[in-house]
Length: 213
Image (cartoon, rainbow, N blue to C red; front, side, top):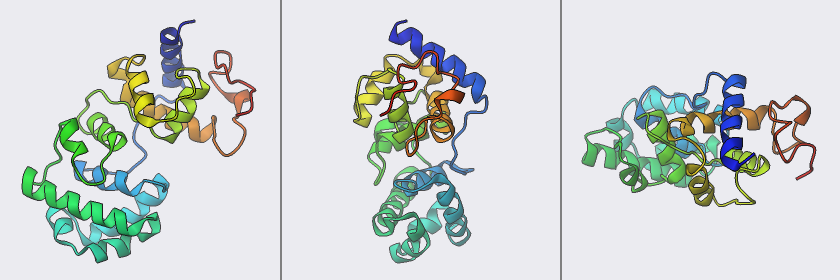
């Protein structure tokens, strides 16, 4: 089986296993996803979803958050860790959205990358989930799983993994595929324990089946 064939088979099986593929960060507006994905760095999505409730109660829109003192933002987001840098980036980002984009999140990948605190992973998430455009989100689950599955060969650098996957994953499948990798990485192909290969839908085609990392 070629890597291309393996990729398509993995996509097919994960679709069946996790039919509802969606971002695990709660949001109802694009700017809120931008805030949440910044807070999610080195923090769980579940904790972020709790913390942002208080943030949005106090600052319900882009203008309010742009005008908020960084210190006040930091007080609220501190439970997510790295509170000062995250609060600084969120404040700066909201100011740019307000002043340069009329409060809207740009639908251009390069423009997103220029926003404070936004890297390739965050930009791809926004492009895929908000704008429905082709995206490959190389988070820790994605990187771990595609290495184990043999889609990439011992590549750990996010951008290099992303570039490799662009050659294998059909553009229209990329965003949902990465969401399914998150579900699979949390439930089955875990990082902190031995993977639960016995209940993996990919065990007969995964080269790492039964092999210790």
